[in-house]
Length: 459
Image 1 (cartoon, rainbow, N blue to C red):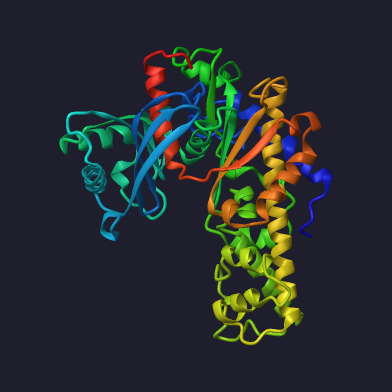
Image 2 (tube, rainbow, N blue to C red):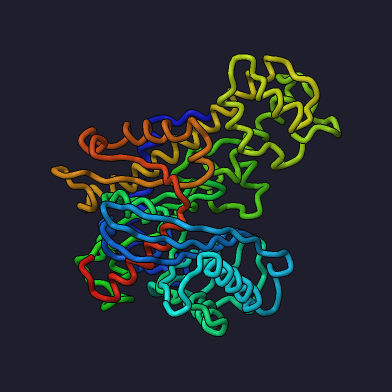
């Protein structure tokens, strides 16, 4: 039920390529009914070399966490120094009439960070920002808020230019900061890796959600060239944000548990790929299976017991899968997960073996589907001559996110799947790297790239 045949993987690979092509050639202004992928332009053109120098600031709002970062680029093939501080957004600032109140708090965080670092009051620092809001980007430093997510509620902010909101308040606070660019998490992941590995062409975030950004030729972007004829030269390569969480069920091997998951979700009918592969949902799929096995008396414990948390949706956290899969022969870690975390009561070794196997099956499928989706992007890039130099260094893929980083079996499974789905000569030129430092570094790299673009430096 959770194994994926070669035929189904090939279908997904071809489907991703098809959706990319559709998304490049049709309008996304009000959503794109012809493509599952939004293919949002980042307006970041060209590639970092690893030799650029300078000091840049970065700001990331991720849920209720604010990260402020200073990155000093030293050149010399990608050397850099990072200073970063994390702040929490108080509950009373997550909703209201005026979003300016929240941004004033963010500005105070930036001011505090600069004071901690002893930053010069005379200098104006270029900053890149990455916000967790849905933004329709219309330029490197322009974008309208189309939705507030992660518990934020500021209805009056919808339609506002996010950079302008920050600029006005930063200036009013007297901060020596100029926001020169904005980018989403996948673009930041790509560039965070690319400064040290300049052949990086794809960036992926795989955590509670998932997204992919990659380089494509501007000349391939029919819709972009119509709407922005003078913004970026057609011969350039630019990063695109695919928003691939919405890859449709028509390409995916959904089973009865996926259908239950979708029906009981708060976004039924969309984000099928995300629901089958990410940390938000994998643990819940495991829980649904365990409930079924308990109902059939295959497991010895009683989920109907009022103390047992397995009867409660989303109470089997995806992180439990990491423990169960990596457990040794006596399955003590799995026992702790079931008896202490999920309150199942006493379990048998057979119970624990079954739970471990269920985690393996669900995790294996998720990694295989991610690998096949990456293969679809790689295949598109090969077909259109993007990124791969057969005589040179090939290209790199960068991946960030807790699921990918912390789930020990995920990376090798993804790489093995990718290797089997692309030609051997391409696989030999491909590398997959896990972004070790924070992807917020990528926002600082975006600021650096913005300066290169604005000053017409060779990109």
